[in-house]
Image 1 (cartoon, one colour):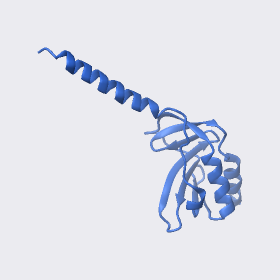
Image 2 (spheres, rainbow, N blue to C red; image 1 turned 90 degrees about the vertical axis):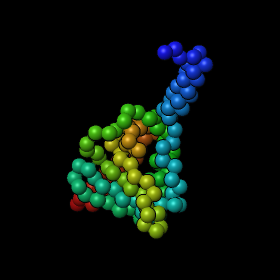
Image 3 (tube, rainbow, N blue to C red; image 1 turned 30 degrees about the horizontal axis):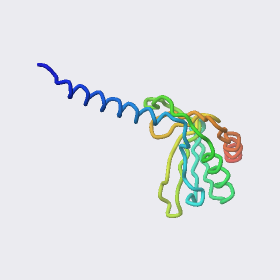
Length: 138
């Protein structure tokens, strides 16, 4: 069966459009854009020790959120099937509803919506999370 020349062009154009749209997801971008004023609590779970930390101090929330919002990330490989993490972070609004959830693996890597993201501009304040978690452990 012979495929018409117009159908070939159509499939080629559709393939290119889909490919370009997919490629744009790999352009460095700000991954976390939740406004600090919308966050009333940050829950941090330490995947290595099992300890938990709840941050509700407005200043601390602003410090964490401004740090994360200022970083541009490069989308990497899919994170499906990977086990273990350093910190699982969940953001909550004033009604207690979950706004967002992501995993921080290191000062330059997080997992979000099924992909790894690597920091391109700036670093995650990992030491601050470590210090707060050390206070909980002691």
